[in-house]
Every structure is written in C-alpha cells, then in structure tokens.
Length: 296
Ligand code: F3S
Image (cartoon, rainbow, N blue to C red):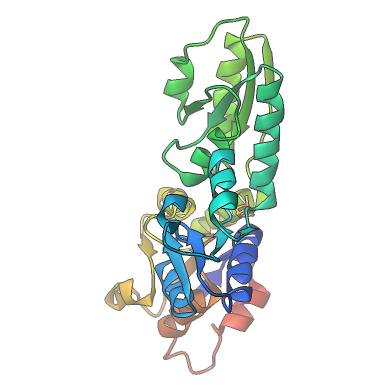
C-alpha cells in the first residue's frame, strides 16, 4: 500500500499555540478553558487529566476563587472578555492572532459607521466572537443565496470580513454580489492561508489516490470541509476521528491512500493511523517520518 500524507495535515499555528499554552499553564490551580480548547476529544480529555477543566460560560465561575481562564484560538466577544476579566483572577488569551485581526477590523470599522457583514457560519464560536466586537448589529451570511437576499440599501456603508476557515471561491462570489448592491464596500479577505493550503493540498492528493482518509473531530467545521473537498474528487473518502473508526477490510495492498487531517488533529493520532494502516509493511516504506519528508 502506498500512502501519501499531506504536509499540512494536523495542527495549524493558532491551534498549536493555544494547546501549548494550555499545557504550559496546566500546573496552575483552578484552570479552565472557555469551551473545549479544540475540537478534539482526545486532547480535551488529556488536558482534563492535567487539571484543565472546560467551562461553557464565564458565569459558571460563581464558587471558584483564584481561577485562571484560557481563551481558545476561536476568540470571544468583547463582552465575554470583559466579564472574564472581572470574574477570573487571570485571563490567558490564546485567541489566534489572525482572529484577533478580524476583531480589530470589526471594532474599528463599526466605529466609523460601517455595518459589518461577516461571511461565515453564524453558529460557529469564532463568528459569535467576531460579532461581539461590532458596535452595531452585524449581519452574518453563509451562502450566495443569502447574499442575493441581503436587505441593504445602495447607500449603506458595508465592511465585509470572513470566518477564517471559509471557502475562498465562495467568499469571492458573495463579495461580487455585495459589491453590486452598495457603493461603499470595504472588503477584508480574512480567510486564513493555513486553511487554503490544507484544502488545496488535500484536493491535489485526492486527485492522485483511489482512497482518501480525512482525520478530525466530527464537530470540526474545517475537517468537514476537507472531507467534502476530498469526497468530490475521490468517491472513497473516509472521515475518521481516530484509528478505531477505520474499517481495514476496505483497504487493499495495491491501494494508494491519501491522508490529511483537520486543524485540531494532533500528530500522535495521525501517526497511529499510519502505523496501523501499514503494520504489515516490513520495509517501513510508510513510516510517519519518511512520509513527512516526502509529502507534497
Ligand atoms: Fe488561526 Fe488559521 Fe488556525 S486563523 S486558528 S492559524 S486556521
């Protein structure tokens, strides 16, 4: 079996930074993250064993004194941030700098009377956080259809930003529609290049292989997008969370298998998948290190 491993598989810069910060401070007493630090249950469980608990809301703090809160890479709204600073002894902000930049754009432009239009999924915590940095009521759209139905006047001032994991082509299509509706539009393409690289590399690999594995949390939106992209190109695409989800009967010795992983997937999970896929591979052609060296 030949395995092609995507170089961009696994933790992105922002997630890596947040997870490292969590481990670094795990010796503190009463340490919490606001929501799971990443969409990966194995990492969340391991952090829990290291004393880091998940809190769903800053209001949950009531009984705890001297608590420390870690803000995950998705970021939070200004109001939640302010509440956290009041309720916690210490707030460690691990918001990804690329998300922080969106907060600054939204704050600055809404102050100048631009109505904020966020292109992304309104139910995603990153988008909820971004919304909370606007001084006026922001709009959130996710599709070309919603862009066509947007209720805005030609003389409105609109500032457009994107959720960092949004699809670039879809974003450009939506922006074109908005530009036709109003004169004064400022557009910030805030899609993260890590997402673009991961998606385009996955697409290239999916074109070359007969089976594709996408590793990542079921609730991770960037993993779901990767899966869709690969499935479009390679019918035999499997979304797995861990090695336990693989049905090994589906794989044959002459298969060429592509592997990629979402931004919240740690290396050890990717390594384990490769190890189990190739445990009969005596010449060790598919070792994790060798595949990393050879990856695109
Ligand atoms: Fe940041 Fe991009 Fe990752 S925005 S959290 S580096 S996908």
